[in-house]
Length: 116
Image (tube, rainbow, N blue to C red; front, side, top):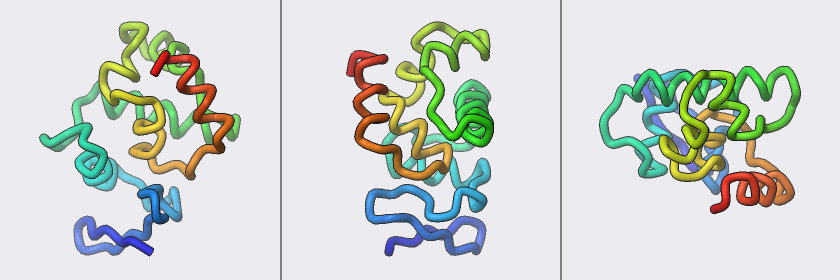
């Protein structure tokens, strides 16, 4: 199983780069995951990106589901395509937020919702 090291702590990933334990997530881990996904080469992540990631994590904790990307943007008072603009694909935002791999149904939903 792949491992990343962030601030001296070893953090396990699955074979696709998702965190094994979502409790290992913090902003530094998010930055490392964003670098791995090609989303950010300059850390720390911007406040807009961190706001999106934190919203996704909180929504998941409450609903055990991925929020509709346009609803993320609306709730955060960001432009309607903020998730795609900041992360290219909602699934990358999900991964960088440190959440478990979504099912194929959820990935299909995200693709349909965002048109990618």
